[in-house]
Image 1 (cartoon, rainbow, N blue to C red):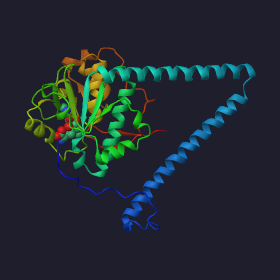
Image 2 (tube, helix red, strand yellow):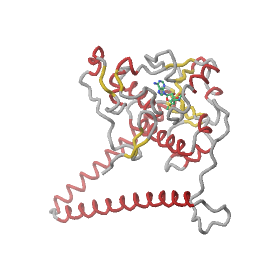
Image 3 (cartoon, rainbow, N blue to C red):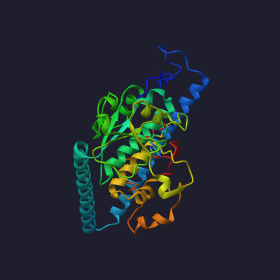
Image 4 (cartoon, rainbow, N blue to C red):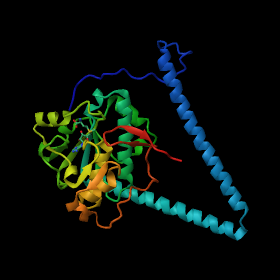
Length: 321
Ligand SMILES: C[S@@+](CC[C@H](N)C(=O)[O-])C[C@H]1O[C@@H](n2cnc3c(N)ncnc32)[C@H](O)[C@@H]1O
């Protein structure tokens, strides 16, 4: 919904600064920054290889210590596990394909990506990756659409391995030019209207931005200009928070997906979605909504990068070992 010009130049391609002839020489600071990035990637890759090699060695040792019969049994169990996982993935893919056609429509409005800095765009890419991971594994996937998809963010997204196979719809146009206005509900924390239930006939739009409060009130302002319906998430109705209730894109997305999974139960959805340190407590009058259902966090064996996104869209590294 925005047409402001980009505020950053594209970041330099990772070339050897001493040998590049086509580009102006990089400043010392940029060279150092680039060197650090390369080191980080190499370190991560080396560590991954070391862990893989160690696992392989341990596995071979275990196999050596087994009798022929035990080895056969071990192999059969491994094959059964692989087959089970393959079937699970296939079922997930089928569910997602069906959801894309007939599921609850959720749009991530990327029109703000032009006024995002390069590092905000990288965070946004991570958050979109999280959203896709959630939709991939949930029993209740939604029909996920990225609108105003283009420019630098598109380049970032296309650098994700497998992005081309994502079961989503991407649109170059604005959501305003795709869906009937009376079906659109823009989610924004500044709305005076509270979203109580999801209406299958509505398209819920999430503002695709990482702004660290820099663009406060922006989506509400823009939605009002276009006379769109808006809604805020009823977070404080159900829980006390130790942070602001302006959530990151992936937390909002996950919350909507969890709301479908828990059939409209906001308490379970919030409990499952928000980091425990953010939820101070569930309001006493709604504790009963927690029930005894399993609201444990999602399976760690998911398609998630090794960073977590804090409620306001910041990022921190997740300890993976
Ligand atoms: C990091 S927030 C961006 C906040 C931004 N300053 C704005 O004007 O919306 C990303 C998006 O998540 C959604 N969102 C975050 N918290 C929300 C809440 N409490 N209620 C409704 N939507 C929310 C909104 O769509 C918002 O644009």
